Length: 265
Image 1 (cartoon, rainbow, N blue to C red):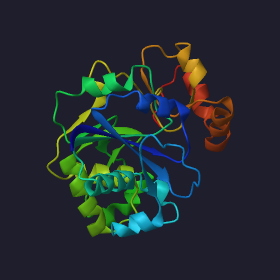
Image 2 (image 1 turned 180 degrees about the vertical axis):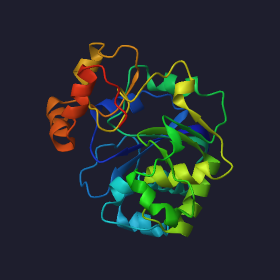
Image 3 (image 1 turned 60 degrees about the vertical axis):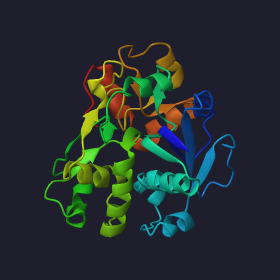
Image 4 (image 1 turned 120 degrees about the vertical axis):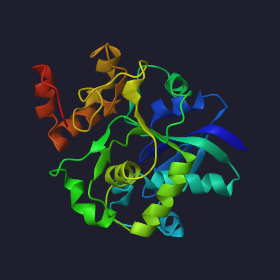
């Protein structure tokens, strides 16, 4: 069976919000949930579920690591791609999304707004990394003069790119993280790239879509930061929101935002 768009939810917990979003999608979209294999209880019975664990990763001849479910987010793409292949399902594009992404517009509208292009990679941020970026230390393993960076919570990749990334990961056997590996491979090869920000329907900045500045869903629903419609990380419960503030030191970024200082994250 052939699909134009396959949706991959990469997660380590059950998200009722994303379950409800995905269950309402048209049958024209095929959904795969790639879940951290260390989590025992799986509650995504309405979708194809693939475990992100050592046996499944090893079967693809990919490098394993204790922190691979965090470090190698691109493995979720390869695990989903392999599961689809085994089920005789083909696709044109694979959308990767994480459960702490929030979109004001319906997810299907986000996908539709990008339907008329054929870029190999659609992402939120892309460019050459500065020398102080922590993942530049794997430059020698990536066999690249320039290390590129992208952002993984939400992106779209072509079938061609996913297939080539799998082969490159196996060949390099690198410990570089998902954002540096994918960014560097795309940036140094003949793949087309575009940003979601080039579409008028998708609005975000480092103050809405970043790594350290957290958002609490009830605040966002009250139209906090009204000009943006794409958020990360966004937490459904105040407890998770507070935990992020404490664990990641996010209060610094929140204070910057309070004084209208742009976060660069």
